[in-house]
Length: 547
Ligand code: GLU
Image (cartoon, rainbow, N blue to C red; front, side, top):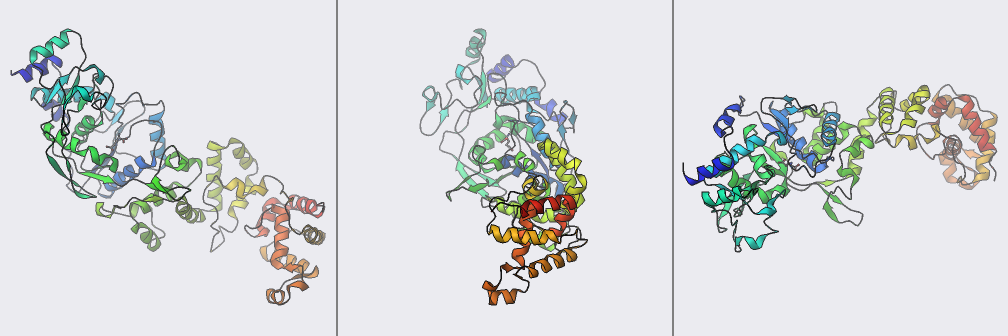
């Protein structure tokens, strides 16, 4: 045994060897074209759109190639971990119908042969690889106390390092077996650091599947592989896990490019084939002042994937919007294939945008309007009810108690219409959109009060529940004509002074009296949904408005 091997055995006696571990993780039996991708979230209680984005790309790459998409929790930073965080991630994936092929259930059962799919349960694996690197002289125990719980303390203790502009060598990198033993005998804790083979003058080239070849300064830091609590930071844990789990493409945000040289050196030291990285551009936003900035958890509610559910955007709308951000070609495909499921859309890595996409809620709402326009009235009611059950319990009871009315409202200019209305873009807005179904209209701000009251009195006097849209319109047209409104727009335009307004104005007065709104679906459907006594009550209220 040489000194390195002796040190390795001293700090990590016994345990499973790397060779034994590798046997437990045999290569997957897949065709070369089948991709294995993953979503590797840190459970922080929040799913950022910037994390969901690469996860969604990964999911698609796996599904399109009949490969494997797995979920791995990167929970080694226990200080940041929040209770329920795993539940949040499962819930969001499930709501978007994104089901990983391999994962760990919430009650701790692994589904798949490459688990555990939770990093905090893989401590012995990381330790075995760290031990191997120490035995090979590629890593070493570091007894500098400040390493406790910190991922990268190089900056906070730079003075201790043998450093020049080029390299950051740890003072413990050349400790002898005797010195290591002495530290251990003193009961000191240790971290494990990589002994970088570089001196800061080297450059490294790596290939990114989206960005092509990237050249950067090679790593020249003795960075931490295991903290002194035995837990690995991201770099070490992901290198081992992505390899053992047979990952073929790692899609992650481009914020990881700067640390990729570290990862490359690590892969080399571990004797692993380098991972195929695919660094996706981050999502940006134009703020109120017209400045472009990264979408942020602090400033943008839409950065949190739960936002879309709280607002009641259909999942299909959100996913299709993201497909648009991944590849603008999706929009053309959607136009040419209006009836296909989004899952039938295939894109390759070369189709993934290289330009940072800008998040635009108006665009999302446009997609959403089209999708909601295609839902039947009955289904829209049902979705609204389910949404309310989760986010607005009072609303849910009102919707249940008045089912018939709300189903009718949801059906307006939708089911029988060749051109359904496209003014609803999420479920949250529907309460305001149908405000007249919840309360009597506010008539305070009616303009031309005298004309309004006069017309409503006349309308009320001859009002009879209409049986069809045509019958309703014929009646209001008649009342309008009898009360000084033009029913022919040409005539009105020629001589507007001769009239109190045109037929559109008469209809507007009736709409305001019944709904308090200036536009919306044909009033006939609203009257039909509200029913005779409620409609008459509202017309009377308006007819008696104080001027
Ligand atoms: N746990 C890392 C994160 O949540 C994963 C990055 C990766 O996909 O490799 O950012």
